Length: 166
Image 1 (cartoon, rainbow, N blue to C red):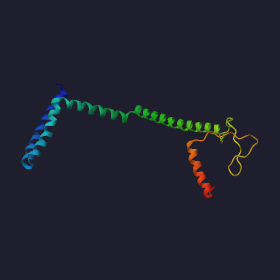
Image 2: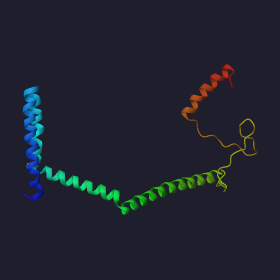
Image 3: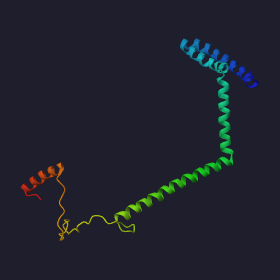
Image 4: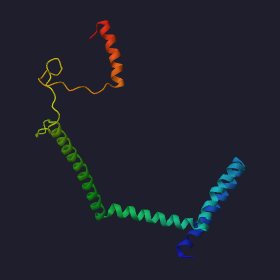
């Protein structure tokens, strides 16, 4: 065994011995169940030493403490945190600018306030005050064949017309 592991042996044996004495006292005062529970806890330090789990826990603990202290006290780490923050700000800003550019393109295509005219599409008849298309000299384009939902609305329109509701 190495020197570091051998130094843990007296501590583990001592903790187990103290725990077993407390287990005996718990057994006499509070019963068998309490004594057994304290004995189970008392045997864990010795079991951790014998299985090598104590050395693994010690290695993990020293590694975590070393990482945290190097994180807190290292200027290079804080520089890395600052660079990561700048990167995050740039991602957010580029997303905002891209969203604005896409919305401007959409307004231009629709002929909105974006500046350029919308590309030429099918001509629509200008509307009159009633919201109906104005009559132009051109023949009306035939409506596509009626759909089933149009038939449903035509029944409702007939009922409303019969009742005198427009």
